[in-house]
Each structure stands twice: as C-alpha cells, then as structure tokens.
Image 1 (cartoon, helix red, strand yellow):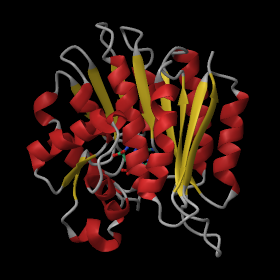
Image 2 (cartoon, rainbow, N blue to C red; image 1 turned 120 degrees about the horizontal axis):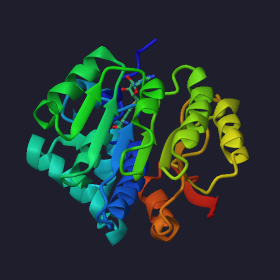
Image 3 (spheres, protein in one colour; image 1 turned 45 degrees about the vertical axis):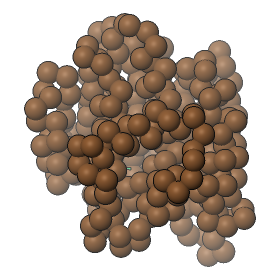
Length: 279
Ligand code: SAM
C-alpha cells in the first residue's frame, strides 16, 4: 500500500524537527575533509510547493516552517534555514526542501547522496530533480530498507543514514529495527537518524524499546506540539532517534528545545525534550 504522499505534510512541525536535526548532523560531517556518504532510505519527492491545493488541503506548513519565518530563530537554526533559502533560490519562495534537497545543500564535491523512494510518482519527481547530478547523487525507485544494504559501509567509512518511513503500515516499525540491526553489522560507526510519529498507540514505543535494547550511543529528541487527542487518533508530535550522534549534537539541540516547542505550539501542552547516552 503506497497511499502516503509527503506533499500533504511538507514543512509541518515534524519536518522542521527532522530537517533541523538532519542539518546539524550534516553540518558536523562537513567539519572534516574526509568525504562521506548520505543514504536516505525514504526520500520522498525531493522538493515541494507550498502554494498548491495539495499542500493547502490541511496547510500543515502553517504550523511548521511558516511559524519560523514569523520569528527570529536562534543561531542554531541558521544552517537549516540556509538550506531552505537555497531551495527558495532554485524553486521560488513558495517551495520547501525535502530531505534530499536539505542533504544536497550540505554535501561537498566528493561526498555522495544515495536516495531511495518507492512511490512511482515521487520517485519520478526525485529522478527528474537530480537527473543532472548523476556523478554525485543516485536515485533509485526501490525499497530503501533493502537498498541501504548495498550502500554500507561507504567506501570512505564515513556516512549518515536518514530513515524516515511513513509508518502507514505497522510493519514499518519492525522494519526500522531490523534495518538498523543489519546496518550496524555492516557499518557500526555510521550515524543513523530515525524519525517517528508520536501517537497514542503502542507501536512507536515498542520500536523505541527495541532501539534502546541495542545499547548503542544515542540521542533521542522529542517534540510534542499539542495534547494527545481525546479520541486517541492523530499525531501530537514526533521524535528523532540518532545513533552514533555527533558529540556536539546534544549541546546544539538541547538549549533550543524550549524555543522550538513554544514556536510550534498548537496548545499549551507543547513541550520538547531530549535524553540519551554517549559512548
Ligand atoms: N524523507 C522525506 C523528507 O524528509 O522530505 C519524507 C519521506 S516521507 C515521510 C516517506 C516516503 O517513503 C514516502 O514518499 C513514501 O512513498 C516512501 N516509501 C514508503 N515505503 C518505502 C520503502 N519501503 N522504501 C522507500 N520509500 C518508501
């Protein structure tokens, strides 16, 4: 079943959290000259327009990136907002970058980007987006949980992986865990970023419990933008589980979380926090 289209959600509070953390990790990778690979197992369409009927059906970006435009974000958001501005320069001010364009903003001439997207329409858009960049960027209309195996370890033994499934099928939670276990066997020193939705159902927590059991280095960052709904449905926030975190990540993220929760709040239950272990 592939009914999920990220175009309905682009630029929402979950994208802001995910793409901000992703940008901080990519920025950290650029501190060393040694080339690295970025693997994005669930890449989406690459770039989104926020002035379309699709994006405005629920206009989720109004509770996300549009809130940041109305404030003066702290310096820690600078590199993320620069990546967004880069997309505006390419595609206009009503555009918003997906994770492939965020990564593309940061990678340097010798770094590589490996993108997987299974939905045929989004895979075609992604292919079109990067058609002129084949030396550096590969796009594959394949299952990213499987495709990642051939990418690890990267030749330079430096790399980061974004795992961002739609979780439309419950199986995705278990597949994230088995994908991480397999990936760590192949490339134990890689940095892995896993996004997940905060929902009132057991699967996200079960996935986190299994990730915790791996006893790796990790940083877990959570953002709730509202109180969980009375009927038990819907996403009230999201989280990022980062394995083999850059040692600077927590000190970059933690002081900004109160501001982020306040800026993206839907009600007065909004909050953000992080926890983890460094190894
Ligand atoms: N990472 C993107 C971003 O931040 O801009 C958003 C990705 S969206 C949450 C999830 C995407 O995964 C959808 O475009 C969906 O079509 C795709 N997808 C679903 N199952 C997949 C699979 N097994 N392998 C690769 N892509 C998949």
